[in-house]
Length: 257
Ligand SMILES: Nc1ncnc2c1ncn2[C@@H]1O[C@H](COP(=O)(O)OP(=O)(O)OP(=O)(O)O)[C@@H](O)[C@H]1O
Image (cartoon, rainbow, N blue to C red):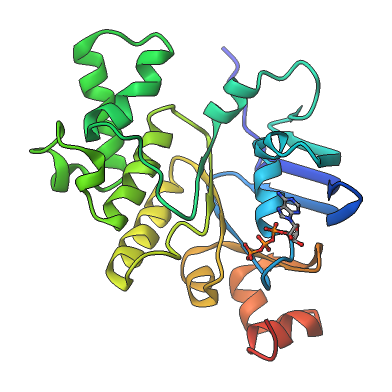
């Protein structure tokens, strides 16, 4: 039996530009994102971080004026090709947003809903998926005795971890996190950061953050964007200590943005 070795690169973008109508928000991005790593997108407000992130699981399809050119490959498949099933793509590439957005359902149902919708009806197996997803999202111990309570009874930080658990329940390979901790208090933020670092053993994580300290703490590689362009993409330790580009240097030293 031959065992296929997975390539180190999981996401490969080539010449990716993203337009809203006539306006180009992201320009000619070329980057290779490593499997089982944390990659941080940083840069001043409006530089295109979220737009590029959303292109990676075709969330921009929901914006009528939005158009993506160039190629984004995930494990060698061009995600924008006509035969890609978008629902399937978003299972493989899960996304968590800045504001936690749990369903108006119980904690249990928030996790069980999508797997059941996709055909998992065995109660025992669903229970297992719920427990495993909550454990991986470091939330199980806090909610195991209140699974039937409304998800809205959780704190903001717990709701955000619930949203991560909900994405995990679909067995993704990639998690896209768009400023997942920016609305949270310092302790909840720390829990999300610890969670992100532990999840990279199983998943590839791409995270948009405004918090440079957070990028430095949790990411393996960092991409710095400015006005839609990728200015520098490097190992996080290198980018923050000896940046190659003077614009990166100016940004990380707080001279603008
Ligand atoms: N739905 C949209 N329609 C039109 N223009 C948009 C839309 N979303 C974003 N833009 C524009 O695209 C550019 C990049 O926005 P984007 O949200 O990707 O930046 P960002 O770096 O993530 O910003 P922030 O850090 O403030 O979230 C901005 O000029 C923004 O106004």
